[in-house]
Length: 175
Image (cartoon, rainbow, N blue to C red; front, side, top):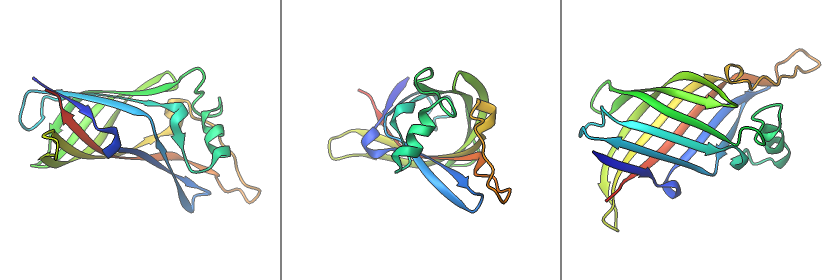
């Protein structure tokens, strides 16, 4: 069994949500942790766990970030982390996987499926063995209790229910 830990300095956890249904606002989590255990060379038996600190959310707008941390959205004071625990990683091709697991946001746990592209293995300058992954998917924010909504005077929706997830992750094999 090999254990991997995330290399946070070479990874990013981002999301996009439509604003006014015409443009995307991009956000990220600055503080996160992940681990993976696998025996199979193709990672098909991998067990993956991920957490992100809600207070580390950043959309490059302090007022919006504070609103996202409030009870209208993530309720960071009550639910300081969001969590993911895998239930299956299924190879679809040589470098494509389906990642299934349970995502917990604001105390609500729902099954999700994410697409994974395996970027390969590499040894860095320090002799560390790394594995790279691009992970993407979409969730409905209302399913996780993120139900704040507003409508413009013209009847337009301010924030979409769909959240696009995009993660670029380097995992470091532990000695």
